[in-house]
Length: 433
Image: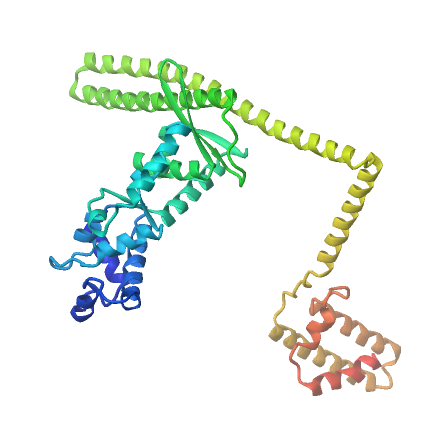
């Protein structure tokens, strides 16, 4: 992390950071009762966690924290050693040497636990500043959850196997990978495995569900070998692509300079690279196909296991197949009923016309009905005039674009916003019509 970026972030988080009076009080050493320095401790602790979370790290260096993060013109907090020491005692930070070695056996891990307990009793505020790095346990858990979530997005089973290199790259580095795997091993959510296939192949088996990780099987070792081969082939493809592009650029430069002989040699290198790429890509496709088959077999195995468990439960509880079928039919009917209820509760579709448009159409309707009534007052009009009025009313209703069977049309008309006298004046005309 760049110290300048850290200081800019601190000034955004702490507006009064440059206030001399407040800074002097903050930078003093702890003294008196716990109640006297507790607010100051909370301030520094929260600020350390905020900085680390913002920059995406969970491993911090005590000397860097004191001398670079919180350095104000050569002045550093006199209380920072006590802040880190209290966080260490409360389990909010830990040393990487206190973590159980995830790449060792059970007996060695037990030895590390006993050793870390003995070393813990000798820790002091002064000695904690001499540590190379400390791990923020809260952010470590967040990083482990982030890694599991990322793996879950690309794997459909309840567990997965990845190479050690890929796991460490996901964690952010070798040291970070060590800490995350140590945490997952302690939770029994991750396990280290290795195999020798002409060279050492290391991997991690991670549980992607709430269950603990299962024991390592021969299939896990074979899967690890295939995944390792896949990554090696992909790396080889990348090297071939880079060399092909370099040969292409060199061939173009040779042609521009008029050196056709050298350009021809680079062209041959390009052709050879293309052939090598086709062979490598063919092998990669075969490896990916085998991995896909293994993943499908594991999924089928889980489904088969669930079916077997269901059959055993039915047998143990003496439930007949007819009863199971009846329950399934009742469940289907319940689902259908629920869908019908949800459909009935759906809001009625709103009309496309605005209230102002509806008012305008009603005014036009009023005028047309009024002109029709004038014709009705003529005694010579007879039945034909009445029929014309009916036709005029029908045309006006059509212009209104309101279907008789449109759901909720009554409420839309009632809320049209027309004055009450207009509605009352329309009523006898409509009855007369």
